[in-house]
Amino acid sequence: MIFLTSILAINPLDGELTEFAGPDIEADSFDEAIEYCQENGLGYCKVEGELIEEVNDIPDFEINLN
Image (cartoon, rainbow, N blue to C red):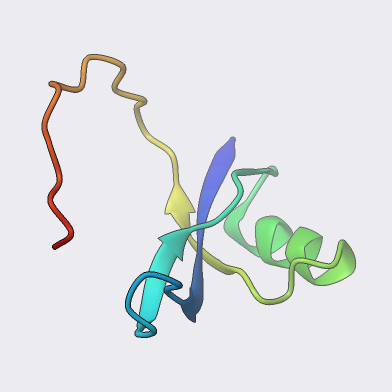
């Protein structure tokens, strides 16, 4: 199974605390994914849950950060 993680960090664009996607973790359970993070220098990551489906057909859109 693949588990998704998130990271809280300062956004360099606006200086605000922001939640970002973290690395995907391969593990047999939620608890094992947490343990993997703790034992592999990823203790700052929060395990969010299991990846159910990956979507590859994302429509193009423009983001204006100004």
